[in-house]
Image (cartoon, rainbow, N blue to C red):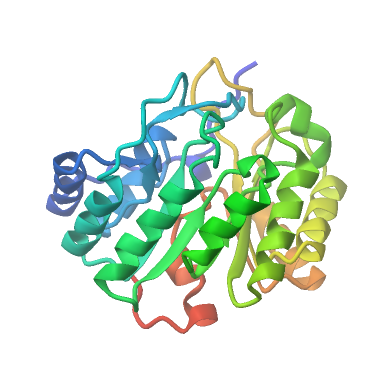
Length: 293
């Protein structure tokens, strides 16, 4: 049974010269964004702030998570010039903080780790002061792939846990809860200076004790920053919303996360992994006036 979208979830339409300019730059360089691919509710706000979250390695994913509306299909070959195209877009948008994510590419031996590394290096090559956050797939737990990305020196390494352990078989049937946690642990152990980040969707049928357990797990596996946002069903083909949490429930989750000892918790109905990412970590990375992500 579909549930009516509550008022605190709804967003107005934003269409300015800035949003048009961002779209033009992305289209000129033939770049994908998770803003478009995942139907992010914050897309136009981010575009109006002259930024976007880059989606590399195509727009077809080898997995079929039931919450995600990115295409599940046979991917195209990697575009070797994509890293330089992203660097060109970063330069034109004058970004100081860049978020790079990808589809999952289980068809590639390294899961696309080398392509991530090339993209990070291309962006950093513009200006070493540019901060780069990567939001990666789990690389099937392949340690060599994980180290390849770390060695490219991103400032923030994000991998989303997405949901609580008991819902994995229903929500993320091709992923493993402990494998995702272990990835976070490995990154921090290999380079303690990288900030570790993860994200959780709520409203899928989890309970408050389930969420507390997950927040504790993230803390115990070296996570620094957690984002918590409301799941919104993208199409009727995707898993239904169990319920919409109220804004005060998100405030409670933020308080619980801080009490557990996480360095930063961003929790609100429309919070997403890359939404306002630059501002979220401004105090942690000591960035002056980052571009809004």
